[in-house]
Image (cartoon, rainbow, N blue to C red; front, side, top):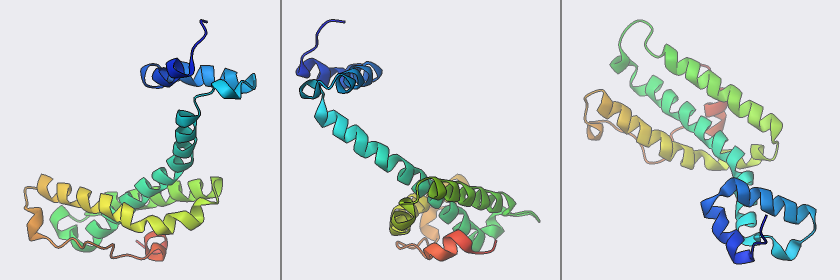
Length: 158
């Protein structure tokens, strides 16, 4: 492999990410710390730390969306089994969150602080769901602030 400059390595980050990783890994193993693309490496490490929290937030958003549908839109779904899919989805998302929290205990303190982030995503999806059902989302009340506590999101009987 030809010798790369630090600038070449920085450009490689956008052009061929797997090769960028491979080269930086070798530089770190060889203790050639002065050649490592530290700016992008730091960003990648930060993203790694956030990826599991993002997964938890996504699962939390699913729970919120489906709890709100159960509480406010069950009649729109129609039928005797209306909401069964939402209930299964809530249960599955809770299991996924619990698995992530068991695997990464530090997320237990962070996730409750992310309810508004999850609600923002859930409320947008609710509006799309309403629209996809041929209705005008402006005719339905979807609060700005999350109407559920973390305890209720994770433990409410459904």
